[in-house]
Image (cartoon, rainbow, N blue to C red):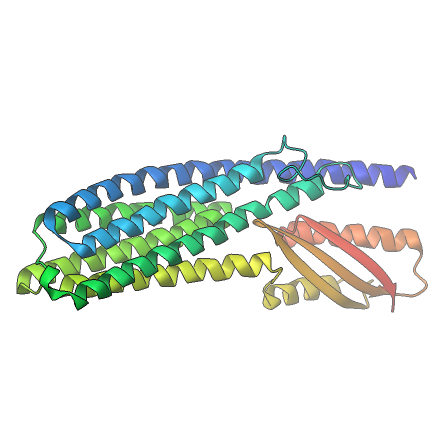
Length: 324
């Protein structure tokens, strides 16, 4: 009984340490996303103004794309805010059954899912805006009487947007890799797409000015819309798979092999890894010698949990033991 109590205290201490580290990562991610909002807001205002003054539908499409960046960054900030709200003892007013270990682990892991939920909503918003941009491009091509060659000032707007987006993408990419944060990874994909669309916008406007071709502006806006659509679908796919409890089979195979290397484990009968936001938890069933004592199987489970935590960063591993 004393050994069990010591184990529970150790588990609680370890969990609070992991929780603190993850919350610090989320705090850093928030700071980067706030920078994103400021950058996107500045670019959107500049591009909307220059699109109106310079009569460029492509630049207007790029401005809408960057408006999507503002919306997505704000949504991700909301998701992270909910995930970090450790003072809240329920989920959206709905209580959870009390944790067995009474350390708030179950509640916090569930709360981390909100970051993924709002990443999913970001993908949906990007898809909706892309369809609007593509529709506007086709509408322009079907009404040539409204087509105009954009003014040279719009070229400057696209160039400034591209440079800022490259800086934002680079900062998001580095932070996403360092913090292993899904929200920043989604933001980096979004900002890279935005940099490419700004480059495409600049090329399209330059071509329209050089060759005096009015329809090129509409075609370019359609291409910009397709870029936004592809990025939105990618973010939607990845986050929806996480919420659907999908986990990379190759990674699970690595986990299985690492456990089976333990001489006391006869076979890994089943293994299921799950995402809780950016954190990974796992359930595993192992087969051991049928004559192994209960206390030895208990210690083996603890050994495997510690191995998974240190080797793969899995925050919680539930081990079930069955006779071989």
